[in-house]
Image (cartoon, rainbow, N blue to C red):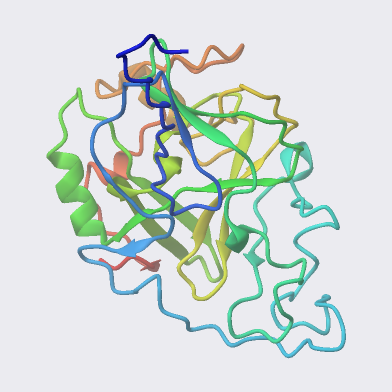
Length: 306
């Protein structure tokens, strides 16, 4: 009880990094500290050079009303079911040699919110926390157990054109963090579909995810309303409370290196050290030389523009 004449202390309000824009608040640790300013958005937004607005709805909806959405009858499921009855991604970890296309039912579908082919669009389902790490700046961790295969969060930000990506990267110094990610999907006839996402100024909690050579998250492009994919991160293994969340910045899984990676490690001077602490750490963060050295790229379709 407060002494006579003293005002009672006001309760400390927990800061929500997501500013109420997610299903659940995202706390910050330690109290009183915080990352640099940025505008929070739970979804992709159109940025400079993008020729596709990620908020536009261009996919038709399925007509599954009396029957559940299943492969063969649902237009959103061309090959197989994406998720099991526990909302877990079916192909994760060692079982997944490559990421298969994932299409979820959308707002034009007749199946309704109960459909189990609606997972990423439901948003955060686990309490997460942005926290200060020892060597890696800010990071993201879970405050509760996450089973393998469950959706954790998105990597959302501005959808950019390639020239804007190069402009922003060339303005960076060795001390700046690079949040820009390039997703390359091999489609058919040798074509590659590219999506460029930058959450530096507008982004979600995915921007706080650190790299690991032994990650516990797997990034999968998931399409819902249009060909602009949501960069969804799923648990690649069971994740314990207070464990830091991480993914492989190179887009690979289980740290499979090729000869080009080794040459970059040996000769690249722009590489930043990796502090993930994994047993088979490559010692440097992944480096995408294509974003620094403009080259002619035939047969490439850029989702974000050019």
